[in-house]
Image 1 (cartoon, rainbow, N blue to C red):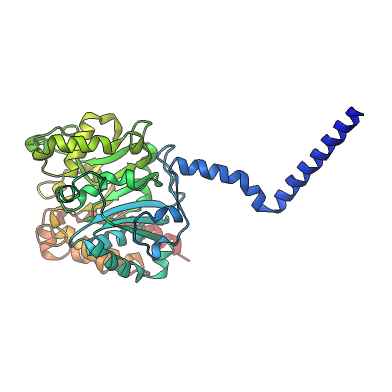
Image 2 (cartoon, rainbow, N blue to C red):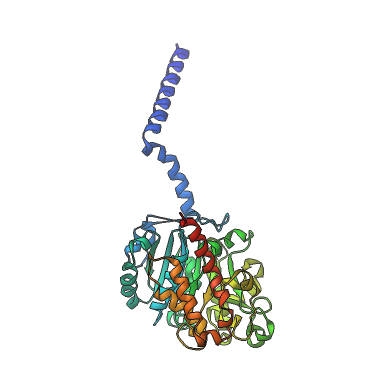
Length: 399
């Protein structure tokens, strides 16, 4: 009798299991239970940023509506399959410069992009107003979040804020602020994209298991290097690093306790710093060189690469992929080639053929003052990547 009872009980349980399995195939809400456990694991690894997680003391914006800000990479190697994360810090009079930078990223990047904008509170409205006025086609690709400037509790926020350019040091604290973001590209406001962000993002895949960030050298030639001639503190390699464009694996930076290492370096060397947060990054990677991947100067092309002589070999081969207009060259007359690129992007209209942007750049590069300048004499390097993109688009749209 007990045997028959047990057999009946097992048969009943089997029928219930079959019913649940069959119902789950028809009803996704049941099948989703198993998927949710994987989602929780992803959040713990910092691989996904949900809509609810974005709102940590930030101002909400039209750009906050995307509910699946998903980054891949960092831990296993980044691929541009999901949304790419871009971060920038803007204080003072840098609003328009930041918007032109973001515009250039949108023009050349085909993958969805989420921009984290850290700015003084009085600048938030202007950012929202301008970005929200961009065409719907832009917002199909771009989402954004605006954050206030914030520093760790117990730190002198005014002292950190004034370190070199106003608020530039904010970038040092991104790993502990954007805790749900795995990896991002940080750029200064004076950066312009001339090629897709996806291509730079691929350097995440080139990182080995110990590397947690990627930067370009400060100089290619020691005879004109700044760090090897003037620095009063440790720096990376032979000529130091430029921090205007930085790939940051935030997951690894958090595991490395990056913030807890940077703050003591600041306290030890603060009287010897000239370039603020860039100097602190040089100090850190001097002591931990194995943690850094160095990418070539074509991804951080500055006036120093052409104002005396052409010393960025990779740009000669591949063209300039990202422009860094340091020392305000987008706005003064010292380096008209850089100003020409900035004005061309600023004046370009969304939803028009990118060939018009190329034509505008070529016209400005042909102006006498620009053509006569040292950097203007290598105009072909500034145009090479854009020309390549235009050629590809013309083939794609050909009947």
